[in-house]
Image (cartoon, rainbow, N blue to C red; front, side, top):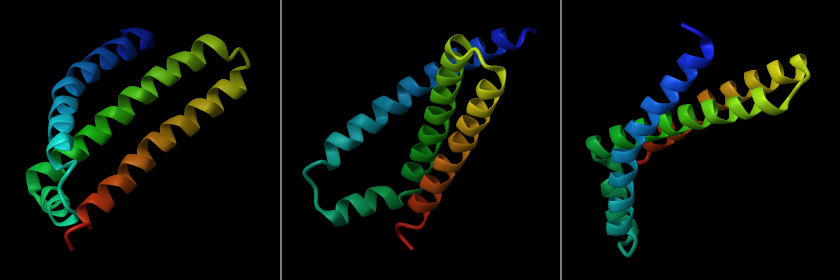
Amino acid sequence: MIAATKKWIFLKISSIILIPLMLWFIMNLVFIYDKGLEEVVIFLTKESSRFLISLLMIVAFFNSALSISEIFEDYIHDEKLKSTSNKLLYLFAIIIPFLTIILIINIGI
């Protein structure tokens, strides 16, 4: 399979996965918007919330990295700069969700 086809398929799959995760997140954000700090911490310490927020972060950053990578492919013509940009993009797409997940896990401890 061609690499561009794989990217396109992964982009579509991650987009489909993001829809229910974003709906869940938005509904819960509306619910805890007017609540105090204690209710927010309780929400974030639930195992289901931790798992779903972690999954949301991973899929969202994966989706955005694929999308931005396509922009690099289309608009950056220098191969060295394109390669470096893609590597930095993928590095940050791994580091940022990882740090976010660690912070979420450590909230209730």
